[in-house]
Image (cartoon, rainbow, N blue to C red; front, side):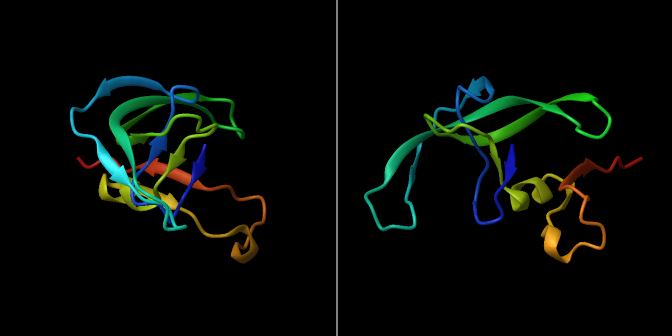
Length: 111
């Protein structure tokens, strides 16, 4: 799983996520190279994640992700996560005070 701050939407494939719902509204996706657009499905998917520091396992539900055939790792769009009230630390390791700090995604509960 990787964060992609340049993406406009999270991306998954059948190889790296369990598709739990396929939306009936494909979109046309264009790359940076100016090639012709490709039609991609929009899906809701579940991604398994193991916290490397604690070993805790999580099932992350990603809503409205692009289904990209052949994608090896889920790409999480940090801006899309923030729109769903998730806090994301995507500061580059080079500028972090602790070089061992990993990208952190957490949900802040509102009571």
